Amino acid sequence: MALTSATTAATVSSPSRIIRRFSSSPDSRPPSSLLHLAPRRGAGGNSPLACSWHRLAVRRMGRARALLGGFSDAGASESDDDEEEHALRGGQREGEVDDAVELSAAAVGPERWDVLGLGQAMVDFSGMVDDEFLERLSIEKGTRKVINHEERGRVLRAMDGCSYKAAAGGSLSNSLVALARLGSSQSAGYPELKIAMAGSVGSDPLGSFYRAKLHRANVHFLSKPVKDGTTGTVIVLTTQDAQRTMLAYQGTSSTLSYDSDLASLVSKSNVLIVEGYLFELPHTIEAIKQACEDAHKNGALIAVTASDVSCIKRCYNDFRDIVGNYADILFANANEARAICELPSTDSPMSATRYLSHSVPLVSVTDGMHGSYIGVKGEAIYIPPPSCIPVDTCGAGDAYASGILYGILRGASDLKGIGLLASRVAAVVVGQQGTRLRVQDANGLAESFAHHLDSLEFCSDV
Image 1 (cartoon, helix red, strand yellow):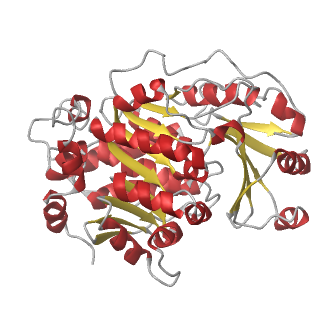
Image 2 (cartoon, one colour):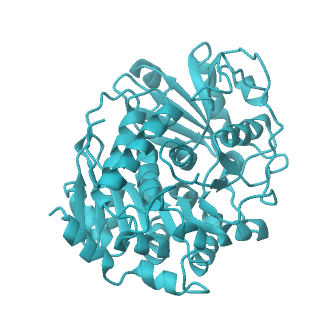
């Protein structure tokens, strides 16, 4: 059954793991920066944001040779809303990537980061293809496959002459860019959110491209490039039915070391997000656990993205360990949620949401055109989908996660309202070509949500 407002308040006000985890922080108080996130500029002391949920939340490319050279900006300018995604045409090289942005963990940053993400730093190559293209290359439609260097070159050569886009991609960075854009909206009247990411890129041109584009999108990539490393790539092939097929070459992006620089970043972050794709790499599990331990010690909330069904099945024990022992928030789609629960495909997403919410304080489960669910303490809130004509489903779940996080960071008490915002963010991304929430759309969504927090009324119409 869907939770009513009264039921929601009563449920999340009861003792939960978030409270226990926060009480274990050094001074038993939430980070001061999170305490000041919720009030909008000019908001009064009796704002509905000072609710039980808020108190709970604060506690707790063309030819393969293009890979070795620069990328063309193909008509995009610094002021373009989708400036981090540049159209490429096979063989063209109109200019080199600006390599001036070289951030590291030692770079000057804020006293605390609102969100720090740990994930694979991948450059996305996104293009529209037909079914015949997939058949010709013996690629199974709608799947995600890890490929080697030779396979990547073969697919890119097959795309020679086609128009496609390159972006500083990866599932986590999609969410972080959307969150940064929602959190930078001046019309919403909130302080700007400070968003950072740590991962691994090589010292190659792709690594420079990745760092520069994230920086331009106001996401601070704080890891130093790996000397002589190769930056990972994901080739995203979208067919006319909006289905996407992903081919991932991990490269250097498959490494994550928990050194003193990363430990320092974790210790001054309010929310830590761990991307599930990292679980595929056995040597990163210990680094993830260390990051989660330090995040708890410093009173941060920990969010985990399920990422992919095949990844869950290959790394099932690690998923259950990290999610069961550390996660305050879990993001998954219906199939991923069922895989974690080991439920049959005939079971409903609501059942999986309820099941998971007994062990994770807040569970978010998406079910495509059928809507989504937010789970709390054994109950599931149904979120109806907004009307949308799908163009490209790639990045929908990433966008949805950004909406949930934005609502939590802004101190919203209405979980249904948070879910409706998340579904609207996802619908905007699904209705366009490309995985990134554009600036003008982010401004409108953030402003609408601010009005929701003022009036406690939020409609699902886009």
